[in-house]
Every structure is written in structure tokens, then in C-alpha cells.
Length: 219
Image (tube, rainbow, N blue to C red; front, side):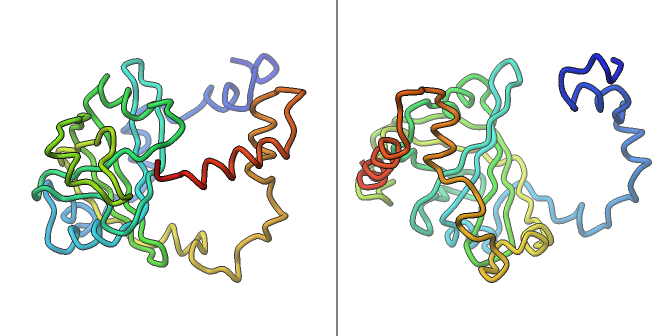
């Protein structure tokens, strides 16, 4: 596609993008032995401890048509349960009720997880088979937010990979002195107002809705 016919920058850049894995591989040096060897198919005592310390996990999923989604899940440290070295469970706390992640998992049976620990630069990647469970005896164990969830995401581990800390260090993720000032970015309400495109809606109304949602975030 000629640049003058492109509907976005992506359409122009895609024209001469890297065409295959072989071409991509020639662009980089081969990974070191440690980067390959540390990929495992089950949890060690140490990676179990990382999950127990994590209060935030990002879930990647895709629907049957290949449309991707990444969504965050949070709770007290240890809110994600390890059932055995090959199985982890994430309770589904109340959110926006779109159920994007859960519907994707039902469609494809796969999910990817990235565990984050506030204040630490190490992250843990877990990929594998996935399903959604409403089994009462399982849900009754998942009470990190005070009551059993409506459902839980169960991941059967195929890959465990601890990432090096470079990304968080480069991004100064845990250095408040390098964070942007709060007024350097649009507020959540401002972003939502622009997304909704409802002329009669006000910032104040959205801010009140957000405040109410946070007040009852565990329900």
C-alpha cells in the first residue's frame, strides 16, 4: 500500500515490515543459554513465593477470531492461589461485567499471565491452558476480598518464565521521584468522557460514578 493511500501510520509501516521469523532472527543475536534454560513447565518454590507476594496480575487472552485483550486483576498479596506446581487460580472480583477475559478463555482455552510485585522489578510470566470454574468447593477457598467470587480463572501451566528487571528499571516504575506529575495526564474521568462521546454527560457525573464504584469495589 502506498503511503498516500494509508488510512493510518500502521498501514504504511506494515508495507515493508519484517516478513518472517527467519528475517527477524537475523536482526538479533541469539539468546544466551540462561535465557533459554530458565523457561520451565512448572512452578518452583521460588516462583510460588513470587506469586504469593504478587498483588497485581495482567491476563492476556484472545477470542476465537484472534482479537487480543490484556486486563489487570488485583487483590491482597497472595490473592492468586497455587493449587499445585502446574495449576494457579485467579478469583474474578467484580469489575465492569463485560467478561472479555472470561469469554475469551471459554472460546480458546488459553491465557497468559504476568505477575507484578509493587516495589520489585522482577516479573513472572505464566502461560498455559485455561478454563473458567464455578465449582463451589473451589470458590469457597478464594476469599481474598471477603467473599467467594462468582467464578475463577484456572490456568494449567505450560510455561513459567521469570523476566529480568530491565523493563521496570528503564521505566522507573518504582521511583516516585521520576514519576510524572498528576496533572501531566488526563484524569480517569476525562478519558472516560472522551470515550463515551455523550454530550450531555459531565465530568462531575463520571467522577461520582467512579467514586461509587471504588467504594463498593469488593461487591
